[in-house]
Image (cartoon, rainbow, N blue to C red; front, side, top):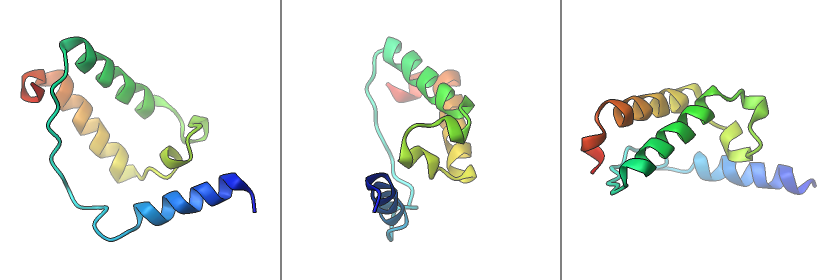
Length: 84
């Protein structure tokens, strides 16, 4: 079996495990510079086509997951004080 296929199956198994869909709160303490960088990294990931993503786990991202990241990006850019 191809090692890449094995890795993909492991990711699929972990992501479909019980509790993985539950919401959790993350508290970040980042510099303003890193907030801007994080927002750009998320933005680049959202702009990329799935076929362009070179990470197996990112290829498994659902439309719901993409929408959640869009909301996070919007919150970071509109209300950075909430993350400090």
